[in-house]
Length: 189
Image (cartoon, rainbow, N blue to C red; front, side):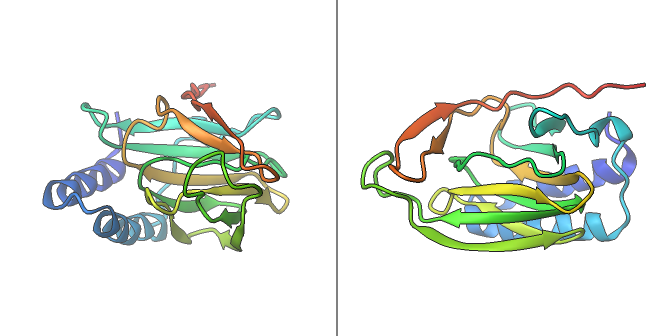
């Protein structure tokens, strides 16, 4: 059960999604709300902030009953990096703690065809910063945790990110491997 502050954020997301189905308007409005949540000093429960030595983790904070959207705590240990991947939906990501570097690529017109991926820039995000991490037409990136502490993000996605079949790209060939990032279970002391 979400605490009052997180429940208010969830309620705000529901209001936005009831008003529009335009992914650009949704991500703009949710980025504003996520910025406000992070600026408020909101504290995630400790179980949702624990890294793994093997890979980054996706802890579910909230999943809409119809699975139309979800709220996730994503935790990377120091130096961990995601493969180059897409989401196939809209998403907004905010840095709760630590620092991350994002490497963006142009989305291939046809997945798996056309050779190497074309870099589209990189940016570093620090605690409190929020970005639109994806829309259906701009959705190929890799993220690495930088710095000397784990990186924790609060992400909002259109759909159930724990069940979506998503593409991972080979940067040299553009070849696609489809995968699902299942939900991770937080451990409570």
